[in-house]
Length: 265
Image 1 (cartoon, rainbow, N blue to C red):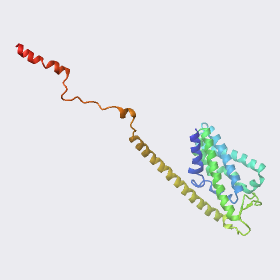
Image 2 (image 1 turned 135 degrees about the horizontal axis):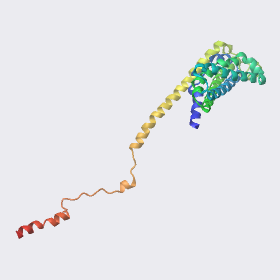
Image 3 (image 1 turned 180 degrees about the vertical axis):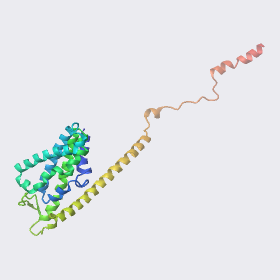
Image 4 (image 1 turned 90 degrees about the vertical axis):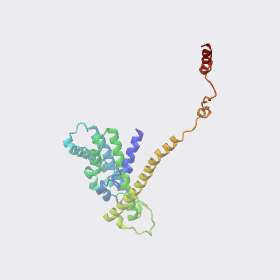
C-alpha cells in the first residue's frame, strides 16, 4: 500500500507532471504566474478541486451511465469549483480579485477532466484521491517555479501581495527589472526553458534507473554461479575404487571347487 502511494505521488509530480510533461492547463499557468502568491492561490484551488472531484466521481462511477459521463463529470467539477471560488472570495479577497475569472474557469481545466476520465472513473476512492493530490501538487509546484522566475527577474521582488504591494526585495536598488518576464512573451520563454531543464533531468533519472535495473540480473547471475564450498563438501572423502588385485569373497569360495570336482571325477 505504501509503495503504491509513493509511486502514484511520483508519477503525478515528476514522471507525468501536468505542466512540464503533459502540457495541460497551460492557459492558467501562463496567465497567473506573474507572482508567486497568485500561483500558490491558483495551485491550491486546483488541488482542492482535483482531490474532491476525483473522490466523488470514483464513488459514483458505478451509477453514471457511460453515454453521459463527460457531462456528469463537468457537473460534479463545477460544484466543487463554485465552492472553492466562494471560499477564496470570503477568506482571500485580494487573491480572488487578482485571479479573476481563472478560478471559475477551473471547470474546463484539462487536468481536472483528464484525471476524472482517465483515472477516477476506473479506480477506487483511495487511489483516486491520491491521484488527485499528486497531480495537484505537481501542478502547484510547476506554476510556482514558473512564477518564481518571472517575478524575480521581472520585478526584483518575491512574494509580493496579490495587489502588487510589499514583498521581499532580492536585488538592490541597482537592479533594473527585465519587464519582458512579466509579459506574455516572457511567460512562454520561461516555460520553454523550465520544460527543457525538467525533461533533461527526467531523462537522466530514467537512464540511471534503467542502468540499475540492467545491472541487477547480471549481478544475481554472477552471485549464483560462484557457489561457496560448504565444509561438509570439502571434508567428504572421495569414494575408493576397488583394486584389480582384490578378490571378492565369491571368487575365493568358487576358486577351489572346480579343481576338487575335477580330481574326484
